Length: 453
Ligand code: SF4
Ligand code: SF4
Image 1: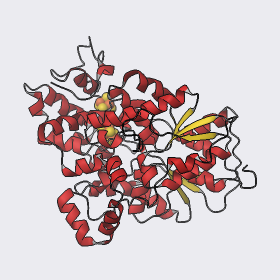
Image 2: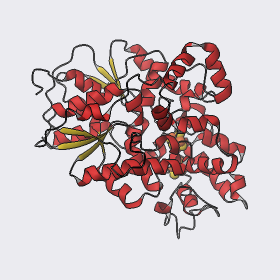
Image 3: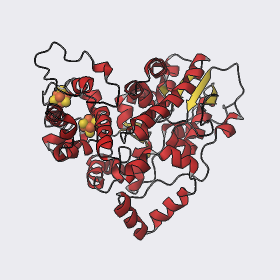
Image 4: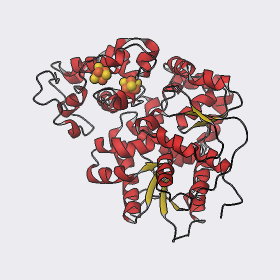
């Protein structure tokens, strides 16, 4: 059976273990599935269940282990490619939010989000891709080439008949507003003008697709904060030999999430090439969006990008990780003042938790004087990339948002809200709360202008 991702990291998994129960087909991919030891810990009762789809449904097929059982059974059939089309397996994989909760919390670190990408690639090879998958996957492309679409999206959000038409035609829930791209995306050139302080430590900042086109104010805030902290900041732009040098860089996450592996690889390769040059020049690599940084650290290996992925992946940090690390090393000189108002509530993106970044968020928030904050015990918000916009998934996504996140926000109407994930902010706004900000914006607000040089 042909597989699309590089599963060689699992080549020795379960070998020589009579109980590993490695399926007959799928090679190293089958071994990645078989790392599950069927302990059913992921189906135990309790508040801290790692898998959001099992937590909300109680259906064992929608737990990580349940998906493994269905996959193992399919991969053990005579014609595995056909067995992967089993509707029960299809439903189970469809309702995986690719949150990476299992990669972090399952006792054997099953990476169901990555397994889902392979599953989707297999399905795309067999059945082709839906219009919606192609549209979501090509987000970095159409945001660059078809800027006028922002008017159409805004119009669709205002016109119920058009929202219904896009639900019928594309499967985009009419009950949900689509994020509208900014009229003025972030511009690398405009940002670069202010950078020329060569005696300072240098940072190369990755402005991901979503920050760039939808919330450029976050990148501007991050720039001000990093510069105030004593760093010279360069925006990561396409490398000199990049064939599409005018189109901004992207990590490839939108393609990977739809199973378009070749396109994901091409995008990740472009970004890695640019980052590698910055790393070679001694710059510290920093990104703003957890899904993007996780893609570089983790998923780029599965895209078969080898040494460059390993080299860059080890160096790239999230904004909060970078600030926490610099603060601990006593290199950070961030002039912060107390901010007025109530405490701040923090919602962690699943991928932020997967890379273990919440400790860093806590450490950075403590830098703001007299600042009270609370981490919301909320789990996945339900948006999970595009999941919460899809008509067949919107009810589950809403139920997840209502499990802890939205009630906590409603109970604290005066609090500030920090959510570093683009999709989490979108989910919160879609539920009528306009407060969420990125941590960079909160720090920017707390900058003491009297001490910023
Ligand atoms: S997925 Fe992880 S927690 Fe669930 S049964 Fe398998 S090994 Fe146990
Ligand atoms: S990625 Fe998330 S939703 Fe999917 S199986 Fe793992 S924990 Fe469950």
